[in-house]
Image 1 (cartoon, each protein chain N blue to C red):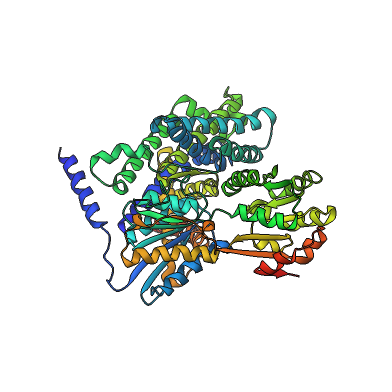
Image 2 (image 1 turned 45 degrees about the vertical axis):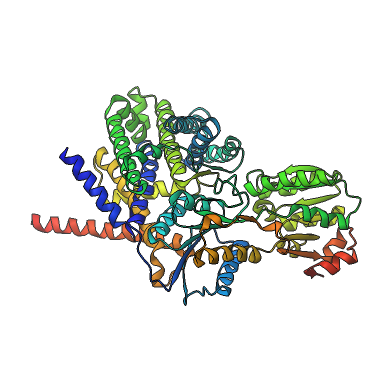
Length: 301
Length: 326
């Protein structure tokens, strides 16, 4: 793997770490499996690209507004669940499907090119270092900041209420937590993050595309699970760090699959190789953990 | 200050380490990628490889080809773009629009020859077809819709209205609609649109056209094409002629089609790649629209199906066909 490819892998990994952090909020904290992200990721890309190309909006503002659109999408999903009792998975699927059409409307077509326009990455061009070096550093710092903000949020009264609402809704309700409101805010926030990730990805990819969301939920969840198996996450700070590590590891698995041609694998085997690598990582980690336990028990004897 | 200096030194070291690797002088390298593997795209890929071989760039002998398929995933496509740029091949050949966009966003230096992109101007891959300048040129595969209408008029000289079943979510379908309207106007024809966002809605969308149109044109639209047999069945039942923008639709029952031969389109791109490998600056090679180069077509007719739709196949059309299904 060339350094260029490695840095590109980190770049994509950091963008998907933002998706993973969103998935952590819904999947782990709120216990709300949220499929909206398959639509909110391309929604973020679509809104951002349309604002930049069509309306000349500053790319940073466009990225933020894309996040706002994502929040609205997540809010609708949670609202369908909270207000109308539609099963969370189904609510997410419904909003995701609707977003597909909405994205086509926003972009007036399935693809909006972002080539040759100013993006958030343009800001670093004047520094004299090539984008393939600066962009992953920028994205790494951004992910770290988002992680720390989530850590802080989850330590506030609001955050503790969110955690309670996910862990034990009945008891949270009994203690005066409005579980519905927590879902509205939490799922909204998760989709804010996903849409921001979509916007950042589109700007680096050179286009927003209606089919950009395919598999985003799987990548998000796989990142959370892989990360948590690698880094035992008994605290919030470690759990969010695990999400970032997991997202990067997932991308490294894909990169490894892309470089697996020497063992006779074909280009079309990438998906399978990625799945196998992730599975192996999980299995090795689990056996590793049990080794650790055995070792600890012995040393205690 | 010290930290800043360290970071700067580190970045410089990274920049130096990532400098493109030099290849052996006698062996040229190209890197091909596509977002998905479907037959037309694979035909195009074969065309590229064969055209290169005819120009002396034979895979494994004088040419090394790296091929990657993103399996439908844009993030994977992005990683492939980075991998290609890191390997610094002599030419990058992206197949399809999003693939080309990812490659163009990733390098301003390595020559890129795209293929199977319907509208490279809208996709912002190039600014103009003639002498595109930068490091990008390629081949547009916009469908030969004018020729398609001509073929339909050979069957139905009195045709006034054309039905168009399409997925409004597909770029190529929308592009086809725009061109169809333009070409229809030149021939005093009216286009009646019928949208089918999913394959399940294709039957309804087709039935909506019954009695309103003289013939139906099915574009090269994966959503609608997936239900080709169902559309053909309706055509047989109510004697409504069905024509296909995609040549493979004819074998499945469409009356006839004139389409691009994707292998031939690929060969066009392969020749451009060979030009670049020969040393021609990529920005001086004109990008082309394959359908404007008139020997890139094939005309297919399904005789028995056409008759079930109430059509008689004109002898002249039969004579001109490249392939006839009985």
